[in-house]
Length: 79
Image (cartoon, rainbow, N blue to C red):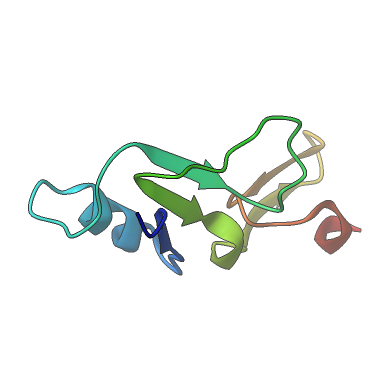
């Protein structure tokens, strides 16, 4: 056993393609970002999805005090 496959998408379509039935990637799919989670997202089978390449800040709403980001954005990037 060689371990899980790792997908490093840079656009959402990369994930969509990986989830398609005819894809070379196999479930279970385990997404992770900055590895700051308290849960163990590692696996010995399936596919890990490294979301750090999806790091766009999409919108900053100064009036509503909210921000919309992709999952790879780090807290320090918002400072």
